[in-house]
Image (cartoon, rainbow, N blue to C red; front, side, top):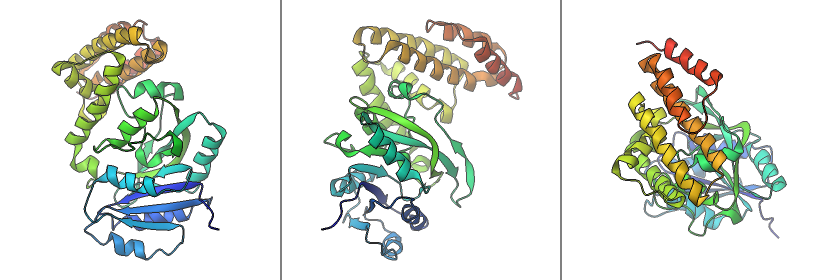
Length: 337
């Protein structure tokens, strides 16, 4: 009788002939072996299938779409075929470091209330050279309310308890992982392991590099749903502002926008006072953290932003600390103008 694997690693494949062998090998090199790897070829037009065929490990399963269906449907095909109790996502241009599966499954087995766990990531470029680190600076209890503004997780780092998955799985959109995470968070705890357990490739030919406007629009779809649950129906100006807040790290922000962002957050907090969708103190802390990050982005305008930031942050109900203001002043003074 064949043994059922504990973990199903789901890897969509599309135009990755350059990277997929490395991704597959990173699963084969895991410190635990109780897994299956499900490769879903989404009608890839390149030589990815030929690269995959060179791997003969019996734990590898190859599925193929006759027509291209997109990333969300490729993930769903893999999940429907999965036998494991846990679903580990790994994109076919990213890399799982050796202890990734072992550490995540151990955590989930010891924490039955957690439905999804992510990890920190080493960043690599298209050639595989190290390009930085991405960690999560927020405590786990802020992750659910943080989803109102941003997706703090990297899809390739996620391991999901199979019975925590909603019945419709990934929806057809480009920010499908953000949407799924937000729906899992409605009923389960979501957490980060403070370990670098994957390598995330900054690929200019990937979705982030080629379809950024649509990704932003799909992120707003999730955020709009969450705001509606809080009790807010955003008008056009508020919708644009919220999207600016969400993507300020990539797109930049000005001090005028940061000021209006603070007032928008006050409105969100007021709505949550009635709906009680989130713990109010945790949502306020998230608003403070996000707003502070916006003012850090606006610090390029000079030292005057420090005084504007203090007034803006105070509107959330708690004056910022001297340490926060000192750091913001330091950034403003260091920024060349």
